[in-house]
Length: 112
Image 1 (cartoon, one colour):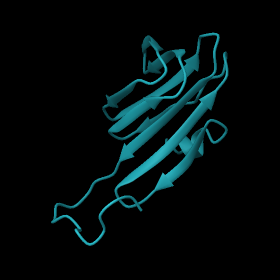
Image 2 (image 1 turned 45 degrees about the vertical axis):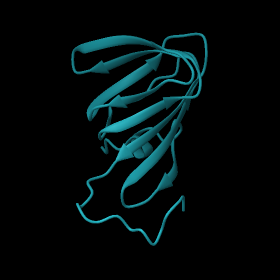
Image 3 (image 1 turned 30 degrees about the vertical axis):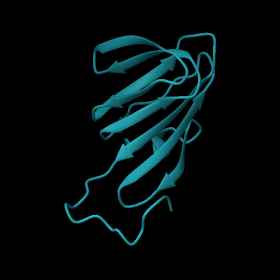
Image 4 (image 1 turned 180 degrees about the vertical axis):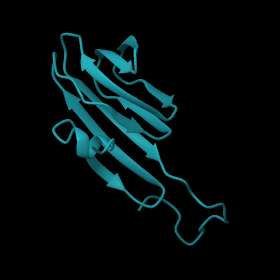
């Protein structure tokens, strides 16, 4: 079974952008929804809604409450989660890919 969240939980995760450096995932759920175990590489998370979740990894678990508009770093991890709150969850994850060191491409300034 794949630990890629887009494959293991396709009803919750969708790819909204991807190139050779990053993959951006959108995550949505409703109260009571849960995910199967999956993994994320080092990532930046941005919450689009306020929510409460229970995150599980092995025998450990942690309850988190996140406000809308929070941006934070997530180290690489394997976990599953459950929406334990009263509101839907809506989050963007910017997953980092290994990138080769090299000079900046000054011919392509600005967004693509």
